[in-house]
Every structure is written in structure tokens, then in C-alpha cells.
Image (cartoon, rainbow, N blue to C red; front, top):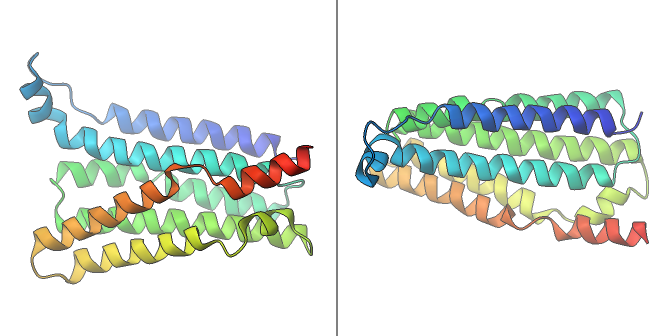
Length: 201
């Protein structure tokens, strides 16, 4: 089985996730910028961060399947697991914003990000396993330090929000780690792009 149907389905799900998130933003009651900030200021920031995350997964998902020649049943299930955890982002984003970045919603948001990253890593490992020896994706990823670093930073953020006694400090540490991971992945994975260009000719 080729990856065309899987990619088309995944693209549709990610588009719906973004649409649900933007529909969660509140419309200002007035026409001034102060009304915009008072009504949807933090919501816009939360939406921006989650939008970037969804965009990162969409870009890297696309690149990963450029190097995937066949799709097995296990790959399909691994991809569904990734989409499931990504579909929780609108809920986690809305709760975190609605509770004004309270401790528990921030922790839950971090857990959702950690689960998304873990499931994406599992998806890539599943594809590599299906390709066997000489996996093109494995060669492109190398040691995959970005994924490992991301998982560590998410864990640090969750632990900080959970254990640091001062809520504000723990929450800001957590949010900072989430932003750092997004910045780390903001530039598309050049390893995969380079490998694809080599294969294409």
C-alpha cells in the first residue's frame, strides 16, 4: 500500500484540528486593540503556539512519508495514534487559556505535547522497522537528537510545573520549555529534505 491515502487523511485531520482551535477564540466586545487583548490576548498566544506545533507535525509528517515507500498495518495504527494525540491539542489549548495558565491545565498541555512527540517517534520507528536493513528514513534521521531533546524538555517542563512550589515560576519554566521545543523544530528537518533530494536525483 502506498502512502497517498494515509497522507490525505492525515492532512484532513490536521486541518480540522486547526479549525477547531481558531473557533475557540473569543470575539472582542469592542473595536479597540485593548478590547482584543482583554478578550482574546492570551488565547491568541495559546493558539499561535499550538498552531505552530500542528504546522511542525504537518511539515515533518510530509517529509517522513517522502521517504516511506510502503505502508503496513502497523504504520497505519501508529499514524492513527499520532492523530489521536494531536486531536487533543484543541481541548488542552482551550483549557489552558480558559484557566489563565493555571498549574493543572499547563501540566495537561505539556503531557499532550509529550504524547504527540512520543507517538511521532514511534511512527518513525515503525516505518524504519518496516523498511528493514538499509532503511532510508533511518539514514536520514541519524541519531535523531532533536526528538530526544524534545522529549527531555517536555519532561522538564511537566516536572517543573508539577513540583516547583511557586506556581508562577514552575508554570513559566514549563511554558518556556514548550516554546523552546517549537523553536527547535520551526525549521524543517533538513536531514530528511537532503536525503529526499539525493534520491530524487
